[in-house]
Amino acid sequence: MNADNQNRLRAKELVTLFPGIHLRELQRLLKTSFNTTRYHVHNLERDGQVICSREGGYSRLFPVGLDQGTRGMYSVLHNRITRQVLRTLVSGTSLTNGDITAATGLAKSTVSEHVEVLCQTNLVKRTVTLGGGSLYEIQDQVRVGEALALFERNLLTVAADRFIDLWDF
Picture 1 (tube, rainbow, N blue to C red):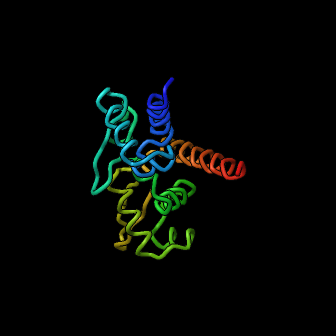
Picture 2: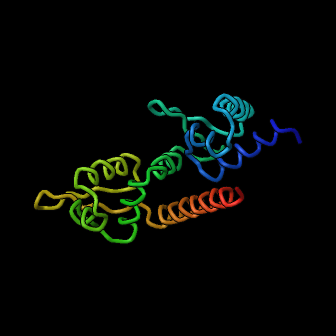
Picture 3: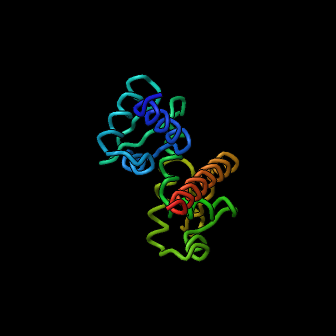
């Protein structure tokens, strides 16, 4: 197998392992130039093996077969702080912004920003209390918990691989 096909195969495997990965992040993991990565992604997209979604100034890559809701979920999982907020919500029942702030140690405004993103992607449901406050809870506890665990396990695998690469020097 030539190097081009090997890089394309690795790119497809990484997109499958990390749905929602940014093009630049994929380039770093492949250890190829940005143009080479873009070339392989373009060919994978042309051949119907990956889906490229453009958000803001970023291109997110997904394996074929994921619905829009699942793609939204994996998009937000790439943000470390959003994952931290989501992990807190998965471990609890209905929580207020203050509860999440206390559990994570993040600023209230930061928690509000990330909870809003989670509400927009329909991962979190907001309920208004009689006193005018808001309670937040996960929409589908099992699905989100499994996706979060899978995503974080994949991150640990990549971190371990990078450590091994450094150890070899």
